[in-house]
Image (cartoon, rainbow, N blue to C red):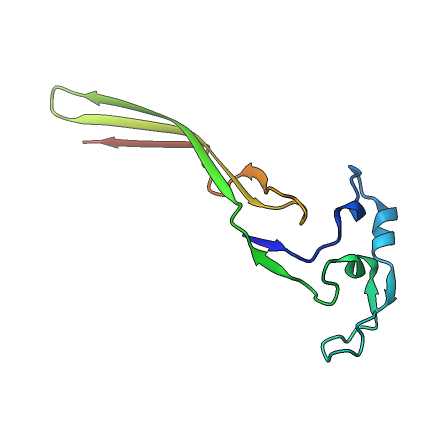
Length: 131
């Protein structure tokens, strides 16, 4: 899974349970770019405070691959089968399951990924057959 290597330090993130406009305004204030004119790709004359506080402010994004994601699955499986004397059979199966995954980060500085219900989760599955 990809992780950001250049991010704003944790102490500058808001921990309030609602939209923190004061922090947003503080972090999005523009300043003159110290990198303007150094290379052809530095075309902006200003940078936000959040960009300047990042570990590598001269890059727009730095990512790396980290193998910290994981998933797990639990299920209960039931099967009902009835065989009749004439030689035919009915079968009914029911599976109740929960598939969980931890494969995204809520914040770039989190050490472990966020645990949530997987996209592959199917709570109930019923199948039947007859011969």
